[in-house]
Length: 195
Image 1: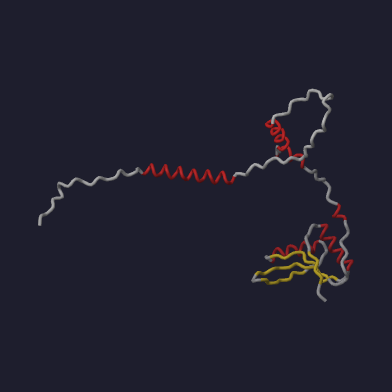
Image 2: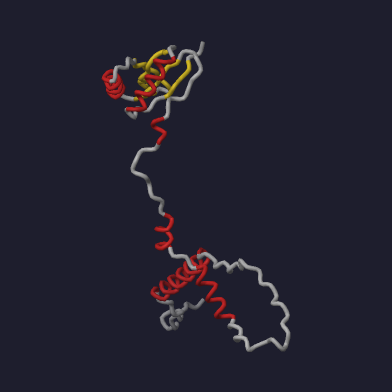
């Protein structure tokens, strides 16, 4: 068997490879095209102007009384006038919508406390995570002449310190406490005790 001589064999022709920068530019162009199409899809579509007035046909005129009428406006001119009427300018509309606020406090502060049904009530003036916050609220109430107590409760492994006034069964005393709390802007919650 004869041996082959590979030395004289011509080298295989390689296909010309596409440079990497061509692939980069092609990918960039495709990406920009997709981004542009997505952007076009997100744009709000212009809504056609709705006609507010119904056009009525003009009454027939007698040929003798007809004078020269102004030529009809071109459709483009009519469309421009309609767009002028529909154009909104935020900076001019906002000051028109401004409502002046009076400097004095609303009259609701002067209203008497709402009447409550007779019974025994507890007024809760706060629920705090920290004991020092609850103690500060209790001291604030003591300065106003209101006796309060701190009740420690645990809900879902969270400890809360409730500051409570009462129980109060005297309606006059309850109204007095409520009005004092309102005067000093102390938020409270009125709770009726179960009998």
